[in-house]
Structure formats: C-alpha cells, structure tokens
Image (cartoon, rainbow, N blue to C red; front, side, top):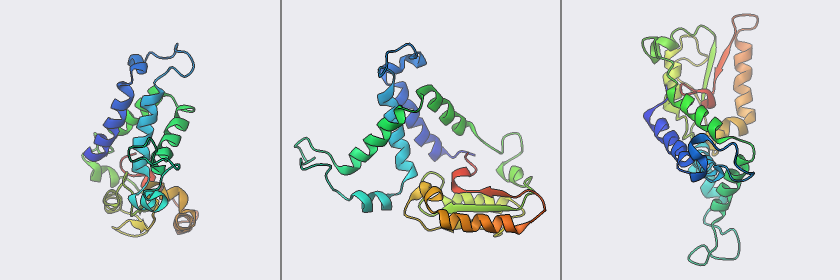
Length: 210
C-alpha cells in the first residue's frame, strides 16, 4: 500500500498544479498554446525529481556550483542544481498533461493491495510465482523497508525473507541506471524456474506502492 509519507509527497505535487491560476479547475483545454497550467506542472515534476534522485548524486554532481559567472548570492545568478530542476520541469510540460498527472498520482495514493484482502500480508501470501524482490539502498521514493516487507510476505522468493538491496548513488532511478546489476538478478530469476510457473520481479520501481 502507499505509505503516509508517499501520500504526503504526492499531495504537495497535486496542490502545486491545482493552485496554478491557469489550471482553471481542470478546464484549460481551450487555452492558447503556452497558456495552460505549465508552471504548476513543472513545479510538481521538480518535486518528484527530488524523490527519484539521491542526496549523494545531487551533492556529488552539482555541489554548490553556479550555473554561470553571476553569483546566486544576491546577484541574480542561479545554482547549477536549480537550473537542472528547471530544465527537467519545463521539459516535462511539453510532453505531459496536468490532468493526466493528477489522475496518475491520485491512483498511486489510492493503491492498497490489502484492500478487501484482509491485509497487505494476506494479499502477498496469494503470490505463487517464483519472485525476485529488489530495492535500491538510496531510494527515497520506495525505501528498502517496503521491499523487505514484500519479501517477507511472498512465500516463494529467490532470497528468502530479505530483499536484494543494490548499492547505488542514483536513488530510485538506480533501477534504470544500474543495468548490469539489475540485469544479473533478473537473469537469476529467469533461470530459477525454466519451463515452470510464471516468474515475477518486484523492483524498487514496482513495490507495494505502485
């Protein structure tokens, strides 16, 4: 299920879109090009990006560097990490719709695999496939304690009651970036039951909260 911490982070993103005056209660589709709620959507994306990355990566990558020769300390300049967040936020608005974003985030908030099944643990006990449960040690979006809970709940996992935990500086996005490590574990899963029941993988991106 989605935790209170995740709901809190998601709720802030939802509100940044809704308070954008150009959101117009969701009725912005007749607006001229560039006149929709792009500022609220871009800010929501910036907030989300902070959950996808880790403090280690951001600190190592940007430190306190400036984006230009102009100082951000009272002279109108910007820190490099500010520019990075702005770039990704603005880029996102060119390929995503604000109402769609709200719908997806609200769906994540409502997700609870234990609903009408007794509990999360009762739901997990229904999984019969050979499973791999994997998390990233720096994942702020889906922390590894959730992965361990999944591993304890599924009867037939490759590694027993503990999830595999990968060490990565890249936070949640490590499951996309650490391809060699993730691929090696997926190979273990595929080799575990050749010709047998369907196997399943539970990565940090697809934990109990997705």
